[in-house]
Length: 252
Length: 305
Image (tube, rainbow over all chains, first blue to last red; front, side):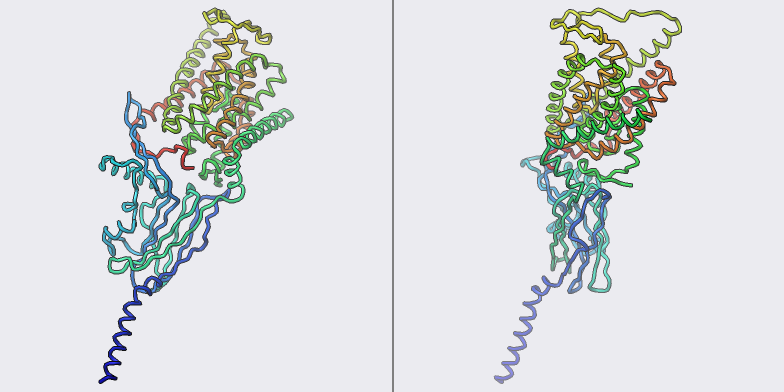
């Protein structure tokens, strides 16, 4: 009897341990990596594609969210004054991601409710965009918020449609993240979520950088750090070019 | 072939830029204008931020003016004394203009002011040039002579100075004022101001036509150089890569244009230029008045870069 009790306790303990360990194991069962941690903006830069790949430990759907460096963004609305369209009302939004794109293995509404998406800021409708000033008319804020998203989409900085996450077998997945040529420099956060039964059971955050390199970086940094010298040099180059053109064509 | 512009922060087709530089250069050689008033709207049209377009165009004009002034200087067609007086007004005006530009950029109205200035000036200048060239064509048929020197109240102003090369004895306030106005325009609109300066020199100051273009170019070099440095310091919007591309094609276009221009009649040339100015003006007016596709816009206040 004692022995039986001991075995039973042992089995129960093992089962309990297995159950207790399960969530911890779930947190571990998502591995993600990028084909390159840096997108380099060089002279010929026309945008870039990055390959993101990973392995899931269990069943579920994968959502990839890419977020660019945040900054304040001013949205203005035009109004017609004396026949001419003039910028009038404005709202400044704080911490607006400069880039936002998602990718999923199947349509979001097939595996997650709007609440789950909203809580995790998945999808352009769920990005948290707060106006700098409080006590604004919420209807107006919503209009300006929509306009902000629309303009960012127009510039190609916010994705219109989710990209595709492709599963290769049951565990291995991959997706391509596309950056347009006008992408902002800075640190980008890539969050990968594993959604099971309408719950985020696991997630991983990977960082990557968009940087100007070589000549482009040199010109940009020079213009910003030594503005006066840059201006003077720009004039000297222009004057030299003008003189050269005149000299060449006089001979010809 | 695409090239990434480090200051404008976008990627543009090299051949498009070279084509624009060459095309505007051709027109500028043909008509004897800087072409800034055409290039800046065109740059904005292809998506270059207005602030970068204006500042970069000032830099490009430095080059085209240097190239142009050397040719006039060799022929002795530059009135340096007049040029320096205009230039003093121009440097003050352009410094004020850059300050105004920075202020407008912060309150988000810079695009509107750039476009309104263009509409105002292009319609006035285009209209005047067009009617003048029509009259000149008619006059040539009837062969009447007109008086070159008119006397207005402005000739009674103090601080008179003698300008030998221009054969003028006028108040220094006059060229100072003209220089100031053109300087402000040059900073706000990203133009050399030749299209305002040349008529002002002929009709307001009464300078002989031979020295007008050379003298105008001479002072434009310094005014646009001032604009370039000030824009570089206060807005960091001068894109040398963009300027160099436009310039390389521009100088070649200008030389070809200058050769064509010697085969055409002056009145016809001015009439054509006036038409071109009016077309650009009509397009800009339409953009201001027509209902935009999206009433909401994100404005580059220059704070986040």
